[in-house]
Image (cartoon, rainbow, N blue to C red; front, side, top):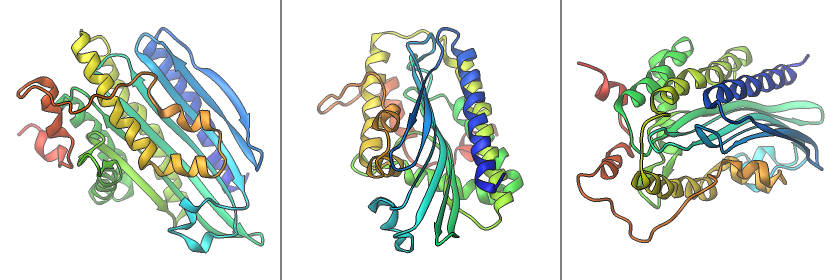
Length: 305
C-alpha cells in the first residue's frame, strides 16, 4: 500500500472502533450506515445512531473524496493549489447526548494530498477534538485536557499541547457572540514534514478521543435532570449550529466541493431552540457556564494545589 492507503485503512478502523465503543456506552441503540458515492470522485460511509439511551444523536462519518478543482474556501489561503488534482480522507464525528449534564463533543482526523502532472505538490494532516458542556464540571474539563496533553507528549510535549490547545481556542470561537464554543481541546491543520511522525500524531489524537470522552460519559450519563436543564441544553445547542453553519471550514469545504449534504450536516443536533434576548438568572447554574466560554489554562487553574 502507499501512504494514502495506509491512512485510509487506519481511518476505516478508527470509525469501527469508535462506533463499537459508543454503542456499548449507549446500550440502547445501534448505528445505521449509509454508503455513498460522489460523482466527481470517491465516497464514504456515514453512520448515525438515533434515539439511544444516552445519545439523542451520534454521527460519525468516513469519507475518501477526490477531484480536479478545489473550492474557493481551499484555494483562497493556498493559491498554489489552483488546478491540482486532490484527494482527501477523514473521519469526523459529533455526538449529541440526551442528558444536559453530559457534554456534546466533536472530533476529526483527516489527510489531504494534491498532485500536478503526477507529482505530489502538497500534503498535510489535520484534526483534533473539543468538548462543549452545558453544565461544566471541573473534573471533566481537567480529565479532557490531561488526556490531550498526555497524547501530545511524544510529539513535542508541552509545546505541542500548548500550541494546539491555543489553536483550538482560536478556531472554535464565535466572534459574533464573543465566546468559545466550549472548553476546547486540540486543533491542528497543515501538519507536514515528516510523514511517519505526523501520521503517528494523527493516530494518537484519533485513538485518544475515546480515552478523553468515555470516562465523562460514564460519570454523567445517569445524572438526574428536569425540564429546565433540557431547555437550556436546547438553547445552547443553537450556538453549535451557529458555529457550524457560519465558521466551520470543513462544512464550507464539503458543501462547496459538491459533498453529500446529509453527511456534512449530520453534525447538527436533532433538536434545538433559539430565544431572543435570553439571559440566565444571575448566580444560577446556567449563568455559571459563561465563565467557561473563554480561553483558559485549564490544567494550571483546575489542577489540585
